[in-house]
Length: 189
Image 1 (cartoon, rainbow, N blue to C red):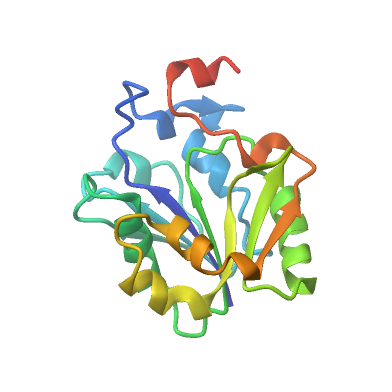
Image 2: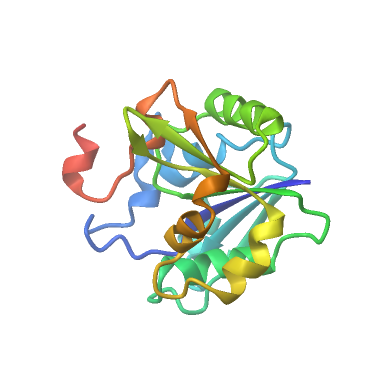
């Protein structure tokens, strides 16, 4: 089973407004990013949100979508990841983890990444564009116990450092793996 986790529990402070509701191609950003993970590519889509994120939940529904609450949205991103991991089905083999503010991600790119994943012999896949690592991270579910119990101060960077010998740096054909929305200036690029 393949599960994607979108991290959407942030408050968008640098943006000054709920960025995941801003329109991209005529739909809210969160919905646009979620369409990069359709059911024919991932068996389950988990979106981690704040408990009061009724506005985000109203953006869309899908048969393979499950909303997961992070009751401590002011905490580190690792906490949102852990809440998402607590919700994965036991038969999960592969995980994709990404922030939800990546507007240029699309299904063909995710499909290419998953194809590379199926043939690589590593337990971690990181997309790389022009020498810079991006998102989403693809990993074996075998790493879940380590994520749940270690790397509190450094998050997934600690996992990547601890397993640097087991990372496939997938050469992304697109800068989409680097493009996120953090500030209003990012909207103009």
